[in-house]
Length: 388
Image 1 (cartoon, rainbow, N blue to C red):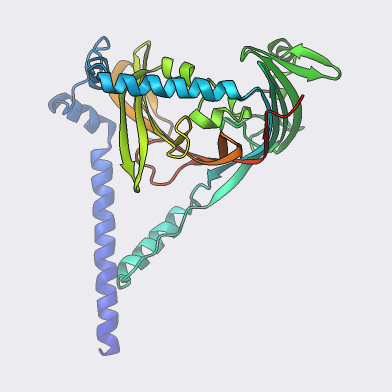
Image 2 (spheres, rainbow, N blue to C red; image 1 turned 90 degrees about the vertical axis):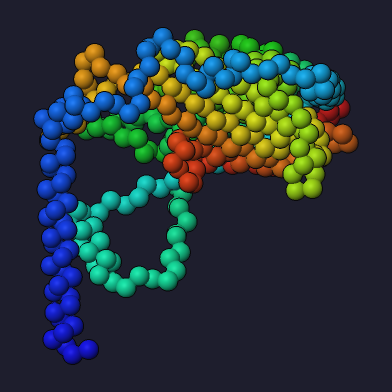
């Protein structure tokens, strides 16, 4: 192609790109003007009218109307409970050394608007690539916990060492700097000893004295907040809860117990629900457990989805500021988040199995294709029923 014709082609592409950009801007400001938005709201009926506050969402109604378990499922559930009680009775004492590493997905790098515009225009004028390999997301470690857990009958001891800039539940803590500014990315080192009796009252060691944890915690300044996370207990990593199997099952509505075939192995599948209503919001948590084929009282995989529906406040976008709350106006909305827990077991004593590696992944919404947060639990040493 002659050089002059090539330049003419490039200029024509740039010209059409500028026309497209101008048209897009005119459309945006024409459709996002507050007055236009208000007019559209008045003349066009909503596609999904908001139900009254007192109306129960459909997903709650479906759970409440689910049929009872069949006699076969009820019998299989009773067997599982009996196996779990037998297993628990075998554990009289033990010591488990394990670690938990928590990582969060690194946010995408934000670029200057004009840089993004230039790159978009450059890519649109370039010939399309035959294959585009999506780069895997990057994760940053935000906390590492090394824990020694001991139990003797109904008494538990926790030796917790941590290097963290987040709490294990993912929440941020504030560090106030000398200039008065607040920081959320400061690493902290902690080392505490906890004791708990009968899964109830918790104590913390202060010097040589065991003090009730809540009383000790209230005396701390707000900037030195200390929390006890249930994940400090390695039993939590079996079910995503540190209660025993009977207690865990009893807190939920059981809607399915059956045997499924996965990758050539038979696994018992349980489906559980937990619902609640808080003011105008309804929440339903569905838990699906796939019990390990080697040892049926331990789940191999747990899928938890929590759906929330209700009448939420409506905010109006401003021209040059944050969105403003519209007084007295609400709209019905639903959201769902997911947790996945996958376990691999090891046999530490004859007949005594326990997870050796557990991976927990958190998806805040269904639009997330990769987890926002990961926790990896690894058992480094475990001894059960050692001689007294």
